[in-house]
Amino acid sequence: QVQLVESGGGLVQAGGSLRLSCAASGRTFSRYAMAWFRQAPGKEREFVAAIMAGSSTSYADSVKGRFTISRNNAKNTVYLLMNSLKPEDTAVYYCASPRGFTVVFGTRPSDYDYWGQGTQVTVSA
Figure 1: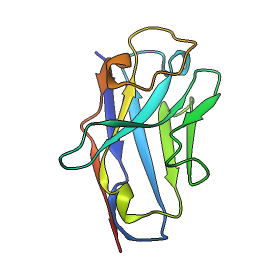
Figure 2 (figure 1 turned 180 degrees about the horizontal axis):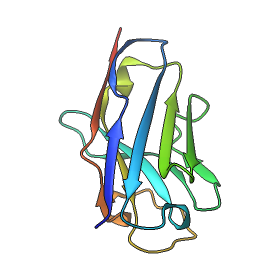
Figure 3 (figure 1 turned 180 degrees about the vertical axis):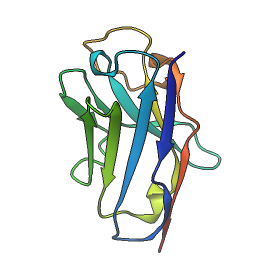
Figure 4 (figure 1 turned 90 degrees about the vertical axis):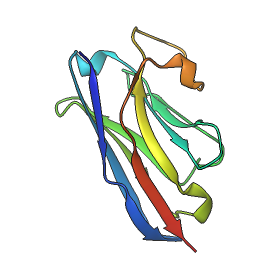
């Protein structure tokens, strides 16, 4: 049973930073892509960033240059470092992983099979 557990969310002022973590269990973490999505109230879930098994990365245009996704395979954990946060970054942040191997960055929620419970990030103006 694959499990993903996010942590690290909270309340931060605009311009501040947060680091989210997602601990994975239930399979060989290093073999699979990981991604972060977010969902603001009344909006659809949107892609934020992804990292392949080989550590290549992809970002949404809205976070490029401000957010950094990384992984520590020894700790079965993926991170999202968020700098220069803006009020529009306020959302519940989810980590996700596909069931199988992939060589293409998926940016749709339907590209991913396993999801964490989410962690709230609130950025005040």
